[in-house]
Length: 88
Image (cartoon, rainbow, N blue to C red):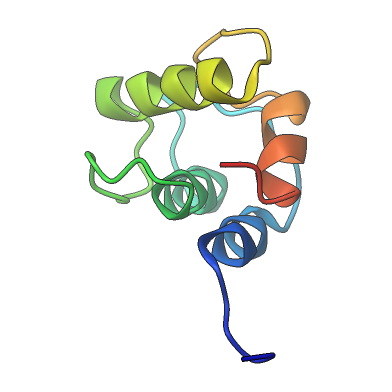
């Protein structure tokens, strides 16, 4: 029981790292981490491919609405902070 990872743990784990602001058109490791964290947080409707496209932007907006932070569609430091805390 003590070794079981929950979705919140996976969300926080995937979000660990630099809190780089990423937005539509961005690509690379930070985007891939963001996508994996969003999927762990419950949004599995897009592919984690390291490309911040329209589907990723929709997922970020949905997550921001879900956790009650300003909705921008970009992964801001506030978005990363929520993900790092495992908010779903």
